[in-house]
Length: 154
Image (cartoon, rainbow, N blue to C red; front, side):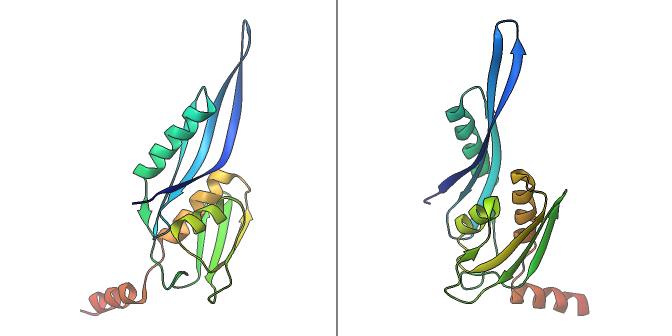
């Protein structure tokens, strides 16, 4: 399985101590195999490289499968996390990924090629990614919906 990683944001934090400032770093990373599996995580360490490595390991552990239909999403979907709200709808072949920031990384690494997306509200990278993941996880194929309806009738 060929997994790709993308660093979304690196944050530097300073702690003032007797000898001056001590810096630590946190990295927000998204990983995916461009075949329907995607994950995200934050890693914290005293060096940037270590923070990215920790975040990548965590993201690989937290990967989830996304329901897709011909390299786009099966239906329009709305996701929310804290102040971040995202809206996505399927697009015709050749449109590409119309999305920004962390949302774009999640969609590209999950393997979705054609989608129209809008991020509203918060610009906090972590919250936008969490809202995007919530929306993608709520996607269902036509077969899954029909199956659920059949069970409800029985």
